[in-house]
Length: 530
Image (cartoon, rainbow, N blue to C red):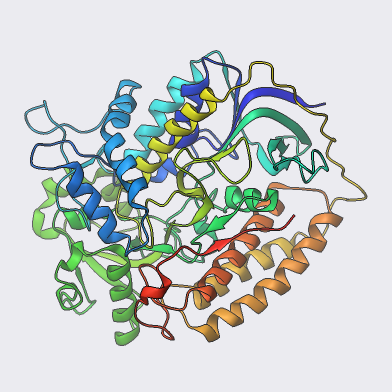
């Protein structure tokens, strides 16, 4: 039996919850959380949210910093929208309960500066900003009578009119989603307006700073429904994740380098000044490639990030979460350098969207990391991501409310057809393919690429995709199977996008085309046929 809502939100981070709060006075809202409410990409954001706050800063400077980082592929109109609207959206976030650190006067904010920024403009809550934002928005949304949280609920696929054979002569539109509930039964959830805000896809790589939920679900689902995706070759690798066999994916925020931390070889020499005039504050792609180069040249498994010269009191006050976490792994960052390696961090591409987060499907919107708005271009400026999610969630809500139809009639939608699927006794197929995808993506489609490696990855991707497809239709759905299917598709989209770009630009570096080519200053767009 179908469940009906006015607004359906897939993903409950900064974008999903902001959107839910802004439309909830108009109708009934459901917010799907794949895991627990606290488990979102937003929760793991350490550094902060960039927005002009002080007189010595300006919107124009923030715009230019963003365009410079984007390596010629930013949409200037979009950059201007986000940067200009950002301070007001941040003020609204604070009004909803988010608490950011104040300066010594207690009047202004204690602003950080990160790589690529010409001014201090990053609001933060110590080194756990995302967790504070998630707390504030979750509390506000859970208190609203029109917002319903559906936890441990995985979206399976977006229900689009063309896929179910409805209104074939009319434009394709989104009607709802099939969702796997906590009892692992597939439900039909229908709504007039749908926002996908599922976060990133870092789990497509072997080493990542992302949480386990970041398996590219939103990008994959929107693509299967018929929405175009773009610029998937631009995957940002964060330069500094803790190198420790038990640390899994712990990020060391860029704000630490903004506060004076320096990168060193294991032998103790600093190396970033020889790679870029901004040294440790160079854009992330340059820092990540420099670390990758140093590790390969010297045969080291990691490099060192050293902030000990700032003193124990400064380190513990400014980076308490990092200090406590590293200490659990036997590293006292106040007295010894941190072993770090690059890791997949942020997908700058995603579902192609307009200035209100609208996709190529009617009634389907995207916001946050799963969207490609044009803000980041070929490389994301640090701490612009939370700002982007905030601004486009608000703009999507504005457009949905403006075009909301009080007399909307939901069409008949078929229930999920399980067919002859049975429970599997071969779950090893999932774990084997999961591991293989992440490993070949790391080895062949990582920080430095080549045609030969990409073609090898494409062959493996096509073979694994076929295996997963057979498995998917023959066996009962599980959350792990859904993630694997989505991860496989995202990997494929990254590979074919990387093969399409015959130059090096921003986050995409290939030894076969090592320099930028002005004839390639355009987005890589992939439009599915359904």
